[in-house]
Amino acid sequence: MYSIYFDTGTTNTRAYLLKDYKVILSKSRHVGARNTSMERSHSILRDTLVSLFEELLVDRGLYPQQIDHACISGMATSGDGIQTVPHLAVPVSKVDIQKSLVLLKNPIFPIRTWLVPGVKTDSSNGVATPEEATRIQQIRGEEVEVFGVIEGNSSLNDCTVILTGSHTQIVFVKDRKIVDIFSNMSGELREAIIKNTILGGALSEGIDGSFNEEMVLLGSHQCEKYGINHALYGVRTMEVYSNATSIDKHSYFQGVLTSGVVHGLLQRMKENMNSARRIFVVGRKTEFDTYRLIFNDIDKDFIIHYLESDIVPYSVRGYTALMNCR
Image 1 (cartoon, rainbow, N blue to C red):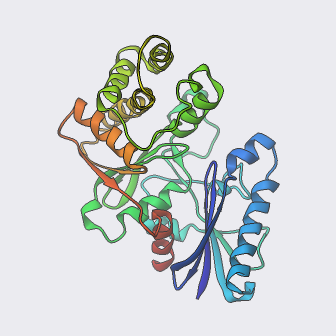
Image 2 (cartoon, rainbow, N blue to C red; image 1 turned 30 degrees about the horizontal axis):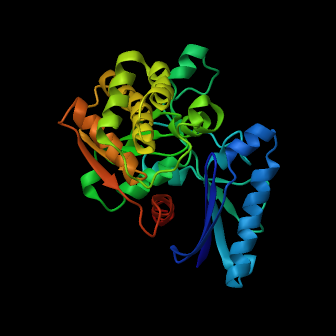
């Protein structure tokens, strides 16, 4: 049996052709919900999905009638996507999501297409006040990744999963259910600062994955003492007045951004009386190393693990887990 899974994010769309739920081909485009939001048009994302669908079939010499179904998760199910699917409210299990899959009303492919609902922390469906809205946390797409992470691993029944990306999403898991979320803008904030502020010059040189631990902690400490706004300006003064290397400046910058996330996470855990000390980071190795350093600097009782997605991404693992629990 053939199927196609689409993982649609804020900045990228990934498509996977599977045979008996094993990936045989994948393709991607640097197009996501950010494009539809900025251009006020859903057509670019819709056209991207159609193009990827057609390319997967052509490359393997398949016809649409040979494909059992397509499944789309992530931002394509938001108001900036192709069809809005309401979030499920926590707590949410893998089975809850599977039972809540929605068929695409206006098909863009000549096969049935399932849409995966996101997850949010608020159970009301009415209009929130501005203050109430700031307390609502939500994910679209990361719920599939989380169930891909914990699938088949009984040691992950109770844990915290940090998913780095355009929006760093932190998902709290208890008894294999998503019970809370803490959302952040880390990836997009990083890109915006590098591309559109005076700090871009100091951060323009690429680095090879190396980083300076002392500079990471310096950035973290400055952020904790003076706030992220002032701490970020330290990149500029390091560029003007010091002999800091490119690695030093990038390390300090990453320390500032990550510190803001970590201290917010700790406050969230305190408010919700969450005592979990096992944290799993999904992302680049340097991102994991930064989180490990900052957590250990604050509280050595935290156990930080690195989860590197190998040949099969966690999103695909989550998709197959959802389909196999029907």
